[in-house]
Length: 109
Length: 398
Image (cartoon, rainbow over all chains, first blue to last red; front, side, top):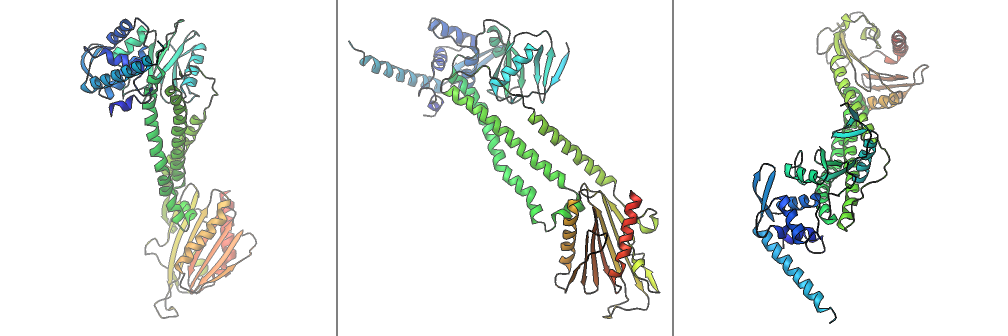
């Protein structure tokens, strides 16, 4: 898969930060600040993302056509997920579910 | 505020070292404002400032505004951008929050830059042998490279091109290696070292200085070559010249110098970087009523002389050899008599005869002379005159 080449370096999947950024775009368009707020709320601040990490992921996702820019209003740039991005998220979700199931099946009763 | 321009003694691609250097400058009261060939620092009260370098993810002169604002909210102010390299941010906050929380993600930004350097490095590596061949092949193919350089003066151009090329390749390769090391660490999930002790290295500036010097030499060379050379008729010359003339050899009554003909009786003076004094003279004439032995026409002797004052003594002997090779190439199908002479005062003295042509190759120190005479007189009988003319010219010049 072409899109998965992006993720190969990171434990054969997206990193946690990348996964949450991609998750943030699944339901609506967002700008950088919205993404940070979404992740902090979703993970109850378990995942805190520095702006360096966030903007590197946004630039990379944009370059790989996983997200695309939809509007620039003043300093605010808004992005939405592409079809390729949605597919990548589903694949990653499926992989993680399998991991969890595999792990749970080994937990002693 | 007063600005200060300083050389940056650290490789900008060695990020931890560069970040440490900028912090050390701030501790001395010098705050980075711009990076070009030099660093531009604003003077102020010494204080603790931390710097971070962020590789460019796209071609941009400064970060996008939303990104700059997000970094500022996090306590990091945008300082400047190193073209095609990094955005630099600084903070003075005590409770520092790092810009990156995921080393693997950070590695993407670095791999972007590393790929660019890798490409440049490969382009240079591939084109280096091509450049070397292109530049040096003509030199190797030439039978007389020194004579060519002495006559046409192009050696500094070639040397400069090669140094420039090798230096650029070395610089890109060294930077790429440093970046690759950081990238490997990040990909393994290791955090980027924030600081590193560094040794100041002004090497690139020194090399740049040498290249600049070569550039200046090249310009001076071109100007001197264009402006210092001249051509005059022998009759106009009042200063001494280091050559004997045809009338010194042809004593026969009825000998008349030929005033017409291409470059006849014309003395040419030239300057090249390897031979700052070059003279060339062509003379011919005829003796009315006397014929060449083969009956091919009126006896018309010819004399040409070339004088070179080479810049370095060690080039003299080589130049004599190359002049001889070049001259004998023309006579390669004719019988040749070659005689090495040991004449007091001459460091090299060789007489060559080929049918009606006699050639003398002589050297006194850095002065090299080549005389070619076509006629029936004996050139060897005039070697003392040649020596005296050369000597008196040298004394006059001193």
